[in-house]
Image 1 (cartoon, rainbow, N blue to C red):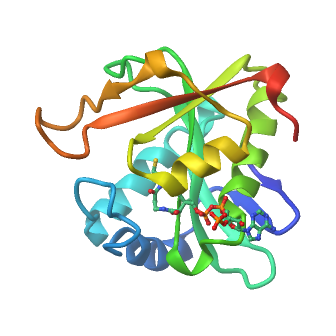
Image 2: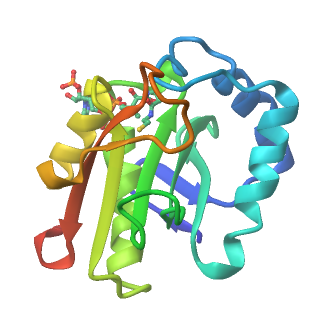
Image 3: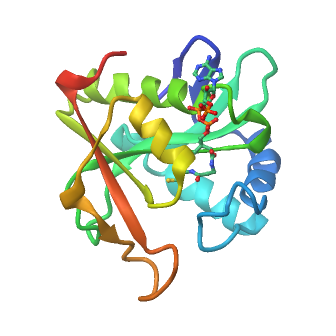
Length: 180
Ligand SMILES: CC(C)(COP(=O)(O)OP(=O)(O)OC[C@H]1O[C@@H](n2cnc3c(N)ncnc32)[C@H](O)[C@@H]1OP(=O)(O)O)[C@@H](O)C(=O)NCCC(=O)NCCS
């Protein structure tokens, strides 16, 4: 998927992204709600894995700031893994470099993806989920018009029982509630 919003370009990964994306994934503050930071090799493997999704129309892709050409972070959409209780569904997600927080870029990029999902892909619903105490991420969901589904609370299946980051909350957005 390739799209432009007012201030951003949503595009596939390029070789020049590895350096800044590895730095983002190694930043303890950016990764504070993830079980671990990524090594450079893990970042390279992640890019390869999500890039392989491109043929399906889904993917977690690069977000570039038009004004500077900087990599802002990763935003994208993908089918929820089958081991998650909310599957089958399509999720939208985001992770930005700290110097690009507080500018509205997560919502702006997510809106680009939602427009593509509800438009081109003709999806009827898109979900998002996050660790319960990730307030900035929940704010993004709320600003996008997503609704918290109390019946969707779940324990992250990829984390061991008792892991403090396990409790997750689910938000939903129906196509008729989306205003680009
Ligand atoms: C979650 C995350 C992407 C949110 O980033 P963010 O910058 O807070 O979110 P947005 O890009 O939507 O920006 C919203 C903020 O920008 C401000 N803003 C400034 N200019 C704006 C504009 N033109 N439009 C909208 N908002 C604007 C808003 O007031 C808001 O600030 P507030 O939260 O203090 O009210 C970011 O915190 C992050 O990358 N966290 C680490 C990774 C992570 O946890 N990802 C989610 C895993 S589920």
